[in-house]
Length: 323
Image (cartoon, rainbow, N blue to C red):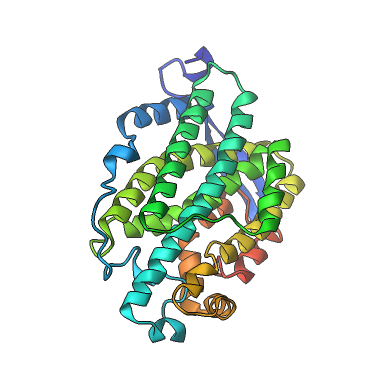
């Protein structure tokens, strides 16, 4: 570890930075990149999984057992949900879980692409780069795991809409670490909230519980890495640039929340997808569920000034943040 990382008494070097926001100055606690990365690498060596071995892919799937807690279903506590049979509700949770997994694969591919660009710009023998490469390896396994989960459920993965799919291709040509790490947190905190409720639930399919447990354990490190790097980025950015990035991310998150459930999920249980999407969008339970799922993310965004300016209004109007 470089000599400037530690103080004379051996403690890690840390410092504070001020971020000027409309509601006052926010103080950020910053730690040297190498200290954070070394801790994450140490944890990775102790707590990493091989999904090919650590998931029982041959576990029987009971047709009466949910694939995620039913309260996480997009139309839960609506007339459309009430009209479904139990088997249809189970099928909907299977389809929605696999839809979220498909979205996860797509977003993790974008993250891996961004992490390669990030590592390319830093010292290759540093722990910071070593952890970026470790996270890329994690995400490779996660994407394979999610694909196998979808296939084991008897379904197929799908891509986002053509607009988002083709627009995302341009990300590889642009490197901007602040929105990159903020976007990482949006996706990872959202899926983490759903999965933390899923893997301990004994009324959920065993195979799904194993997959979500692995993802929760390993994503905790990715979230820490992204949080520490986002703090560093906002501390160095001009307020106007930070607010512009925060507003753009808020709009992207609003769009993401409407697209994470594929229309085929509703068609499979005999529902009109356009109607089901409208019902889900207006459902107080669904809006509360999404606000809950993003709560850790939005709390952190407030701390680092990423809900400053017009960004907060977008989150609130989309039902992703309580006033």
